[in-house]
Length: 417
Image 1: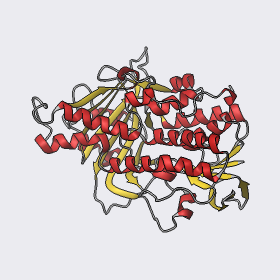
Image 2 (image 1 turned 45 degrees about the vertical axis):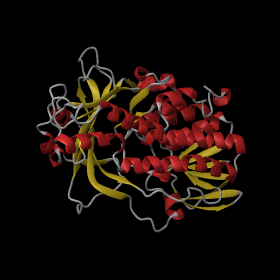
Image 3 (image 1 turned 90 degrees about the horizontal axis):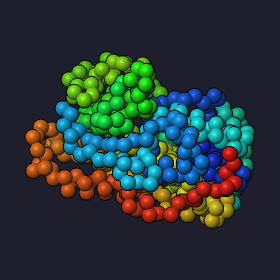
Image 4 (image 1 turned 90 degrees about the vertical axis):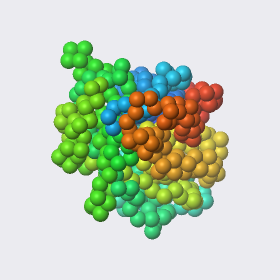
């Protein structure tokens, strides 16, 4: 029996993968009744490929949107770097924009439909014991559950990681705060497009999560407003669902009406707004202790830069599944998975600290204050293209490389309906 702590995107994808491999498992989730919380996320083609291989293509299309375009803009809405994404860019799989909570609920329902009663809610893992040939999860109610392996998919505040690294402390805050919401609005930039505008101290990100309704013409638009704030301010680090007041940030964006999108109007039209500090954790020298390992945010919580966090959690699950297929439910499988994924995750984490692909916005701000008639003499397109490609290669979704790669696991007939 393989034990999984956490029924988020990482843990549920792990469960679906183990079920497809006919490996017995059980998931222990802290929340008593999971709800579709959060706002929008993007899934890169390398992760979408894995979800399609799990038989989820139709389900993803029901809850998400296939992203066509991705671009960076100045604080006044001038284009810096705009590129096609997903199928429009030549990938064999789309990039998907989706509500995080709806994705989690879809994965949970699919897992229950396929595997039955394998998720125990209201049962948080508070710690573990392990040897080289077995693991025990200790739950909040005092139960001790034994298995061949334990996988920590319990997020940025992982109790398993805390036991492994007891002196680590709170997540590391970089002084920026993101406010996230969804609003009714029209598509922009030709439809199915994602944009990021501004620079390091202030930026706005938006993309649609749904098609435009034929009757109203409106879609659900996901947006993020980000500001640098007083670093002495008290923050609740790592809580995606902390409600906030629009008055805390709306005034800073009042002038951000670019003609093709009206950022302050999107903010005003939203319902609840959630506040989240920009935090990450230091990379670890190892993810594995005995027969216990980390995955997803428990292993490599990083800044939400490059639309890559959920993608990496999904890839973790599939790579760990491949290692379990090849080595069985053993410590050797955990070490094989870690040897491949930990260096990659560290590279992404460090790149995101340097703003990853988003760094082009600050480059333009530094070079010309974000004002130009022709960007080419200031920041040549060739340099922008190289910057974008470098991050794709680092993160595992360069077009030519990904299209040519064999599947991590592929479609497995035993995965069920």
